[in-house]
Length: 183
Image (cartoon, rainbow, N blue to C red; front, top):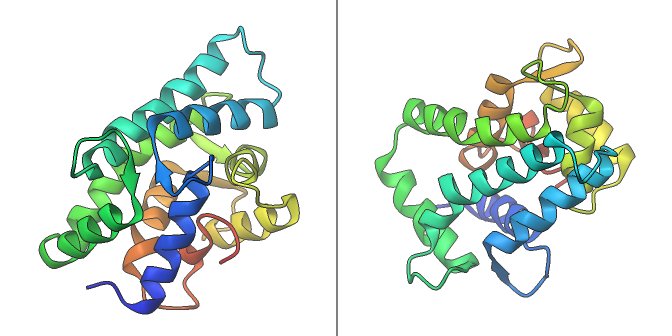
């Protein structure tokens, strides 16, 4: 069962993905976020990089969110997410959760990794969280917290660990709490 602290973070993350603010997360929200990220990175809409970002965001919907749609209406409610995570927390071990997070977040890493080097720089991470409405200043603070080895980039592994711990951790001081910016 999700703790009150975990639920608070879940709700924040959920509403960050809901671009229309209608209380539902759909594939179209991911398309919109992909467009925002591409715009934040000044990626030409006619380029392969632009399409790569959109493809990455579509992949996140397909790999993770679509499976949360319990009633098959192509929209995920907050309650569907809560129910799925409560069930998962009873059956999934931490290692499996981190492995799933690594696989799922490869879509995100690929989408944000504009230069294709397998790492996310501050500029790329900021494009991600600023698309949710987070300030540049807040994005920088969050990036620095997630960059656990302080080398100036986030690897796919660091992103996966942060995403997996974002919900799983009950530690209010965990750097992963900053995955979607300030909480």
